[in-house]
Length: 372
Image 1 (cartoon, one colour):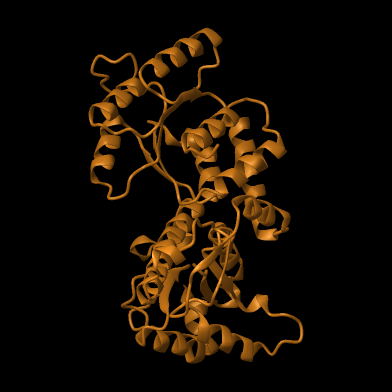
Image 2 (tube, one colour):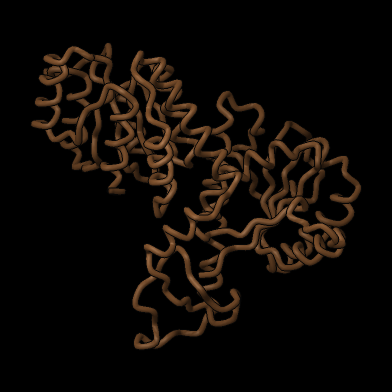
């Protein structure tokens, strides 16, 4: 399947925020899901208005990065927005407003469109901006899937004998839309080598920011820094997950995990924090999307129903409900004997493992998610 062509409509005053979003969408780009464009992609000598017109006329998805500066821009309002909305109304493109900063959009032509982040809470008002971008990227991913599903519906049926034998995130194919979208499979090893050989400043920045958060997490726990090369490998492995992963993190004091959480969200892994076993069970029962992994502390000030710890109580409750997601305990006991006892008990109860430092945690997360 061809990538979805994505056009950024934004005010230059918001360029730094566009760059932040581009970092979070870089993972989708790396996976060959989207092909983004904005006016900073113009090559020297190109006529900027002609190229903007051409890109806007063929984009499958237009992101409106909304702020007061966006609203004030005569060029955006009279040209980019006008073209985007007309193409949206004709069913030629999808338009998604992304609220960067608080501004009144009551009378805007896009006011009736479903926007991002959730509840249109401006990105800059979130306590953790990476969580805001993760929410935005999740919504964009759903829109992209909807667009691609529409392409599939328009294609003629393909005889089974003519269908490709396998697929890969990197494919060589015909133009998208109503043309033949069958792709020539490219071996997985080629995709890995090709993507890692290309130097990408945005991807490099994402990896550096991930590593910086892991370093802070190690400092907060009073342990040694993670080797930079190892941190990079962790990051690239998680980035190359075939789909977005979701983690339920149960800890009565989630601030203790703020650096680890920030590192994971840098890589578009959604982390949902709850503070008790009861809250975890409620979230699992009510959330329409499944979780891929549960992380838990060992002790919490809550009833354990006869279990030796709150963490083990959580594990038993999950299994009694036939919830089979891997469970990893992340605790603070560095005493070797106590840690050994906890590990033995955790494994005997069906946990995936236990960790006390970020390096160990990341290794377990990658293994639990089936990525090595």
